[in-house]
Amino acid sequence: MVAFRMSPEEDEQLEQLVQLSGLSKQDYIIQRLLCREIKVYPNPRVYKALKQQIGELGQILREKEGISEETQDLLQLIVTMMGEMKEVDRNA
Image: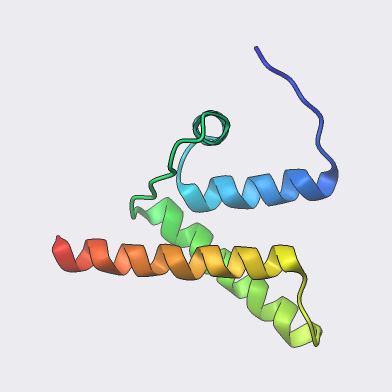
């Protein structure tokens, strides 16, 4: 068993990344700690998380003139993942 502390902001960011990965929190943390690549495979859970995150980012962008570095990173991750999913759908 491993335990560690996180700030509420770090916990929120971790939760977002876990949801977008489609993995369990345990699997996601293990993969990251062991410096393994996180492969995201399209499934309804991942699509739902992407849709939710895109909606939240849209709301943030409408409310603010600028966005934080964390938000920019999250947006880039979502765009990359959607591109990868598009490639998987083409090859299926």
